[in-house]
Length: 353
Image (tube, rainbow, N blue to C red; front, side, top):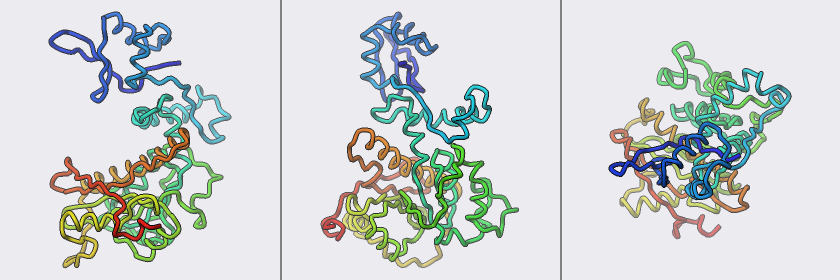
């Protein structure tokens, strides 16, 4: 049954007193008050058959309606219970609503975003690094539907203990000082996770290969070489330099621009090689506001990549979403991040793989 997408609104256009249906990015002019009444009725769950042919066609062309049936894919625990009487399921639906409100506006989505968000449960994402952004990413990705997210077992995050700068990050309090970071975060998995945990999943198995690796901090050359040789997709979030931070690129080895491509591009644009800078003072962690901002942008980049794979499988195409870009964030002007478009640089060896 056709229904309006989440967030669609009616606007009054001045000075003609016309009605507009849509959002800030997509606006459909209505031809009469009768069409306005039809939309109000549709929003109140009236059958879409009551729409005029012209209005129904226009709503579809403007991407303002969903036409496919919604159906969540969950664990066995929910499939055997009555959805109407299960309080946990009703709570899940409430928590899902904001995620669906974002996913439904992706191109070609017509089921309210259900398939996109449900599919996030299938991706294994591994985080390495022991700073505020790494800590926030763990909870952000879990709460966004990526049930199988973990800290890399061999990374510093698995051994470093919670310190003073972690207080206030994702629920960490002074009482947690000295606790193993990964173990303490893992104890909150069920609290953060949007979807119920599947006990049959083996996401904590060290032998399992992640679909995406996210590294926060200085990149170890051996790890980088191993990822490039094995074809491991990864996202790098570099250690902050003074009051600036860089997110990306998200690299698909052999297919998209790599870290060396980014270095060569920045060298051409600025004349400076930031990756080989001699740092004259210790690198500090992110300030709290910037940490949340950078973590949110990085999480969205990871989710966009996961969602693009889901959509590519549905369309049987090859969309490598969220790749080919680095985002530079200035702490003094977080509202205006700089997007640096990247291509596979001809002087980089990855261009010949």
